[in-house]
Length: 83
Image 1 (cartoon, rainbow, N blue to C red):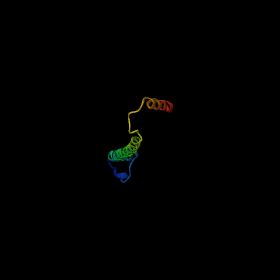
Image 2: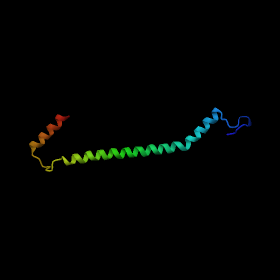
Image 3: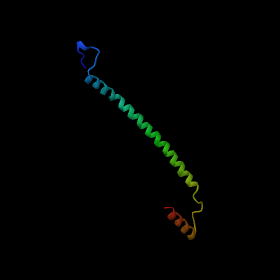
Image 4: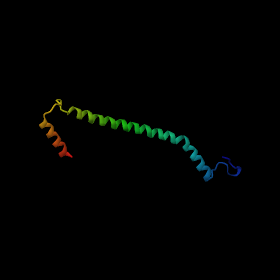
Protein backbone atom coordinates (compact mmCIF):
# COMPACT_ATOMS: atom_id res chain seq x y z
CA UNK A 1 0.00 0.00 0.00
CA UNK A 2 1.34 3.34 -0.95
CA UNK A 3 0.29 6.38 1.04
CA UNK A 4 0.23 9.59 -0.90
CA UNK A 5 1.64 12.65 0.83
CA UNK A 6 -1.60 14.62 0.56
CA UNK A 7 -3.81 12.11 2.43
CA UNK A 8 -1.45 10.54 4.93
CA UNK A 9 -3.29 8.64 7.70
CA UNK A 10 -6.44 7.97 5.68
CA UNK A 11 -7.48 4.91 3.72
CA UNK A 12 -9.49 4.67 0.56
CA UNK A 13 -12.33 2.18 0.35
CA UNK A 14 -10.20 -0.15 -1.76
CA UNK A 15 -7.28 0.01 0.69
CA UNK A 16 -9.62 -0.74 3.61
CA UNK A 17 -11.06 -3.73 1.76
CA UNK A 18 -7.55 -4.97 0.96
CA UNK A 19 -6.52 -4.62 4.62
CA UNK A 20 -9.61 -6.44 5.90
CA UNK A 21 -9.10 -9.29 3.41
CA UNK A 22 -5.49 -9.65 4.54
CA UNK A 23 -6.74 -9.94 8.14
CA UNK A 24 -8.96 -12.87 7.10
CA UNK A 25 -5.96 -14.89 5.92
CA UNK A 26 -4.70 -15.83 9.44
CA UNK A 27 -8.06 -15.52 11.22
CA UNK A 28 -10.17 -17.94 9.15
CA UNK A 29 -7.99 -21.04 9.71
CA UNK A 30 -8.01 -20.37 13.46
CA UNK A 31 -11.81 -20.06 13.42
CA UNK A 32 -12.13 -23.27 11.41
CA UNK A 33 -9.92 -25.07 13.92
CA UNK A 34 -12.27 -23.93 16.69
CA UNK A 35 -15.28 -25.26 14.77
CA UNK A 36 -13.55 -28.61 14.26
CA UNK A 37 -12.81 -28.88 17.99
CA UNK A 38 -16.46 -28.06 18.75
CA UNK A 39 -17.67 -30.75 16.32
CA UNK A 40 -15.36 -33.36 17.85
CA UNK A 41 -16.55 -32.56 21.38
CA UNK A 42 -20.21 -32.68 20.29
CA UNK A 43 -19.64 -36.03 18.57
CA UNK A 44 -17.92 -37.43 21.67
CA UNK A 45 -20.83 -36.37 23.90
CA UNK A 46 -23.33 -37.90 21.48
CA UNK A 47 -21.36 -41.14 21.28
CA UNK A 48 -21.29 -41.34 25.06
CA UNK A 49 -25.09 -41.06 25.21
CA UNK A 50 -25.55 -43.62 22.44
CA UNK A 51 -23.26 -46.11 24.19
CA UNK A 52 -25.15 -45.55 27.45
CA UNK A 53 -28.38 -46.49 25.67
CA UNK A 54 -26.78 -49.53 24.05
CA UNK A 55 -25.34 -50.66 27.38
CA UNK A 56 -28.74 -50.24 29.07
CA UNK A 57 -30.45 -52.39 26.44
CA UNK A 58 -27.85 -55.13 26.90
CA UNK A 59 -28.94 -55.50 30.52
CA UNK A 60 -32.54 -56.18 29.49
CA UNK A 61 -31.75 -59.04 27.12
CA UNK A 62 -32.83 -62.48 28.34
CA UNK A 63 -30.04 -64.49 29.91
CA UNK A 64 -31.29 -67.81 28.56
CA UNK A 65 -31.13 -67.54 24.79
CA UNK A 66 -32.59 -70.99 24.20
CA UNK A 67 -36.33 -70.50 23.88
CA UNK A 68 -39.12 -72.81 23.00
CA UNK A 69 -40.82 -72.51 19.63
CA UNK A 70 -43.93 -70.98 21.23
CA UNK A 71 -42.04 -68.18 22.97
CA UNK A 72 -40.15 -67.40 19.75
CA UNK A 73 -43.43 -67.13 17.86
CA UNK A 74 -44.86 -64.77 20.49
CA UNK A 75 -41.75 -62.59 20.35
CA UNK A 76 -42.01 -62.41 16.55
CA UNK A 77 -45.70 -61.44 16.74
CA UNK A 78 -44.89 -58.73 19.26
CA UNK A 79 -42.21 -57.27 17.00
CA UNK A 80 -44.56 -57.25 14.01
CA UNK A 81 -47.28 -55.60 16.09
CA UNK A 82 -44.90 -52.83 17.17
CA UNK A 83 -44.12 -51.90 13.60
